[in-house]
Length: 303
Image 1 (cartoon, one colour):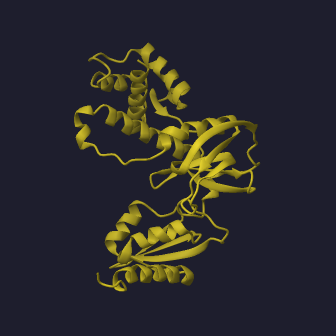
Image 2 (cartoon, rainbow, N blue to C red; image 1 turned 60 degrees about the horizontal axis):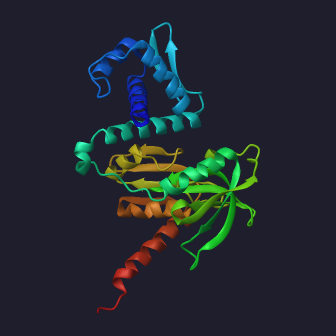
C-alpha cells in the first residue's frame, strides 16, 4: 500500500513538473488515463491529501496560483536547492517509469552503482543527527584495511557511479574524501559535531572536476575539440565555467579550474579528439601520460 502511494505521489509530481503548471481539472483528466486511476477521475479530496503527503514525505511543495487556477512545483529560489529538487524529481520519475515497466525488464539496462544501498542511509542518518561515524577503509594505495577511522560527515557526492562521503577526519585533522564502496563496518557514534560556520558543501569542489582536490589555485584551462567531440562537451559541460569559441572545423573551450587527477583522467579519456592548449604544465602532464601509454605497446618484448 505504501509503495503504491509513493508511486502516486511520483506520478503527480512528475506530471505537474512536465507541464510547468496545470489546473486540477486537467490533472484529473490525465489521472484517468494513468495506471493508478482505474479509469476514474482524481477526486478533489484525494488530490489535497496527496498534495499534503507529497510535502510531508518528499519535501516538495505544490503551490496554487489563484490568478490562473493552476498548480506548480515550488522552489525556495536558491540554485543548490533547485538542483537538488530537480535531481529528486528526475530520479523519482525515472524510478516510477522503470518500476512500472516490469514487462520490459530485459530491455531496460541500468548502470550499477555499488555500495549506496548498504551505507548511504547510515551516513545520511548520521548527517541528519550531526553525529560522527566510525568505519574501516580499504584504500587502493594500502595493502591492508585501515580500521577505526572517525570522521564528521559533512556531505555526500556521487561521481562516476560511486558515492563518496566528505568529512573532517578527527585523527588527521583535515577534511578527507572516502568512497563508500571501500568502507566496511560503518557505525554512527554517540559523539556529536557542529558543522563549521559558513561551510558550503557545493563550494568545496567548485573549482574542480570530479572528486579529487588539491591546494593549487584555479587556472585558465583551454582545450581544442573536434566538431563531434565539441557536441558532447556542449551537451555535458566539464565544468560550470565552460565557455566555447566555435570555429569552422573545431571549437575552443575555456575553463577556470584546478589541475586535478580526475580532470587529467577525463581529458585523457577523449584521446585524439581533444588537445590541451594551456596551461603548459597540464599539457606536459597529458603528453607524458600518453607517452607512457604508447610505451606499453611499443617497448614490450615479443613472447
